[in-house]
Image (cartoon, rainbow, N blue to C red; front, side, top):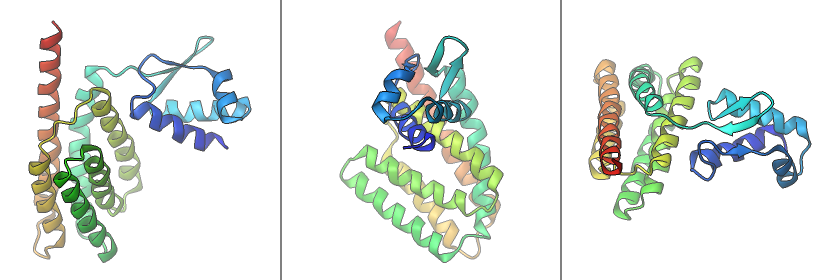
Length: 217
């Protein structure tokens, strides 16, 4: 088992809230758990630090990063603009295979809504977005968005925020899918729709956090 695999396992544990902000990643324990030596583990820690999931404090250890309100406020506006750009760039490049993937993800999202399975919905929602982002052909954009999207999912799991109106969200994704399939689509219109969808999600998330703050004070 290598550093890369360990990094992936620990990433999932952090994003899903198994490991929480401030938790210390104890080297000796993890070496035993994964049956690895120190160097692949250190490699995994460096990778997690690069992804912005942990903080390495010299002579103290490696800790899961604590999420702040500022992290959330910094993430969503940047992500909305870049994801809108990715959709706009993807429009002229997306192939029939990816268009089929969008339809499939959308059908799976619909089934998840019918079952009221929120986690399943997010899984297919992620596939939907990753399909058109991957089709944009810009590796810099794809790399930045991978990190931003991973973080926003982490924030939502961390605050147990699953209150997206799934029916409404599904309708917007249906519109996005239709625009990708239509020969007459103006790519800027598509980009603006994707950007607006993320901005609305951001406003709802902030309103949720404000309500949480109000109920704890």
